[in-house]
Image (cartoon, rainbow, N blue to C red; front, side):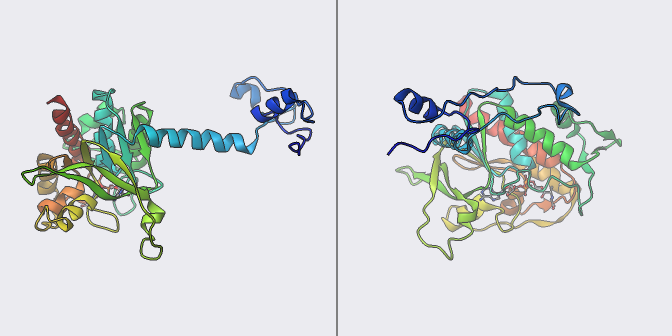
Length: 320
Ligand code: 48N
């Protein structure tokens, strides 16, 4: 049975071209593909023959799936996996993207929308405060701020996060897999019993959230010699890797995040960002859970600079 004839208006597609050649009764469809226009050429001329270039739904599906599954294949072996695309994880990615364009970096973010807690400053207020010297990170990133002496203020936290996100996503060697959760760690144990983290175990976040009511939804994996975990302080998804280290008896217990003390918290988080176990670097507020550091509340300089430090720790491993 010959394939259904393409009715007029159906755009030609590779299938049609092949069918045409093979003599199927597919009406030749010629389309006047608009050359790209400038916005000025388009504006206010909606009635003068405005028309989107034709498309076939399968072309959209193939454009998305081909690329996604190619990315899964490419990043199945990554050099670095960053778990959590909050302000710390994205800052680490930004530093690594700049320093090592040769490294393959996968960012795994459980939420559909990356950015973690950095879309607002505090109590849903817009402005974001960063204490100096974190203004150096904003300057490097190209984010404007108001200088208030010992601290600076970005007019909207979303300006910082969207700028950082756009810079990170523009690196050709970095791939963000959002709506994807890390639900375990890949481990290797050397003959002397030393455990090394060797990658992550992933699943769609919506799947991860339903393991209690759907059985046997096995995960996927990404191998990587270095994992940077920045999953935030304890919450539904937070402090993931350090809690997993406890459950696999690599840590006795978590120190638990202490009360709010800005002056203590930010220095501690940045200074202690480090490789907790071979192959696993922890930064940002996840670290407060393992070390029992204070929380800093609505100031974000430590998140950016903890990301800078986490990147340095990773670069040292690759420099060896
Ligand atoms: O923004 P967060 O939660 O974490 P950080 O450490 O980047 O920034 C913390 C910062 O926003 C604060 O908490 C501020 C400074 N307040 C401090 C205070 O005292 O209150 O981002 C963590 C990201 C989120 O986007 C999560 O969705 C994601 O990590 N995530 C995961 N992604 C993948 N797999 C997981 N298992 C996972 N767990 C969390």
